[in-house]
Length: 261
Image 1 (cartoon, rainbow, N blue to C red):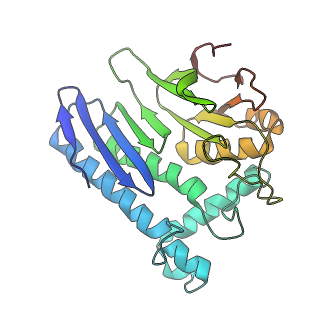
Image 2: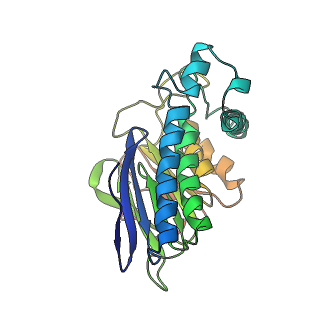
């Protein structure tokens, strides 16, 4: 566990957990209450990893996958997450699943949920301006500086050194799902076939708990995602097509500037 660093501008911390990197950027004065909340948020992420990791045989998910335990024997939030997964599977027309390859793995919702809750831990302690980044998916609150919205660059999946768009806003979540970096590793849960959709889908909305699985579902849906996501209040979509064309942003997507041609 790395040490947190504070400054006149706020509090920052980087943590390696859940097989990825989490970063905290709090722009409020780093008073003791916020330092204590940051420690609780980091401990929370490690607890989530211990309970939900599909790669740890001693986790609740690992035991459930092997059928050596029951939901009644595991922490209550395990049942809550699996219930949420079932709700999301229904809401996404089966394009999101907690069993993407036939084995129990709710990671597609757990990371976003854990990131959002880490942000809420800090907010309950008084933080008003913060960014929690969970492996590239973000939960944002307030402003990075007085009068300035947060600005988030969306990486070009074809050239990660450049951005295809910039999101701007306050109090929002940003999640991206794509196949470019790791190849066609995302499959359609309905068929088991690798997805041939856009290179990436980015969803913005109020809650990362939902924006993250919505982004994965949008990638699986392809063109159907525009009509589907338009029905979800508060969420909007940007896609990077596989044919080399410019990105496409749906109504309500909070672009700071038009995507480059």
